[in-house]
Length: 105
Image (cartoon, rainbow, N blue to C red):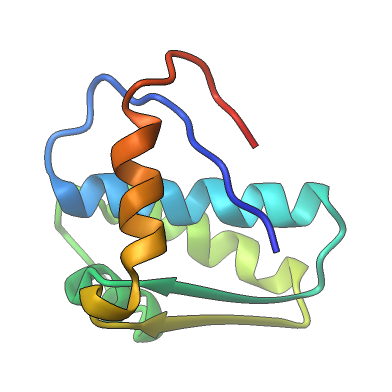
């Protein structure tokens, strides 16, 4: 298990922040040598797009394509939607991370 934070000053909306976080998590997982990954999130829209990769024309389409291109680097890469009530630790980390000016893992 790993957790990290990184500042992104030009994030336009919460869905973009979620997608960037998943992309970062996948890159970090690859660097750490993980082969099976389960990513959980409470943003249903982004999780649904990652579970059913179709042509997407939203503002996060490039990020989704980057994630899709990294899937073959893993034995398993699973995206799960969890209600926010079950995701309180991740939400707390997100709130706390706003006070860190530099990336942290």
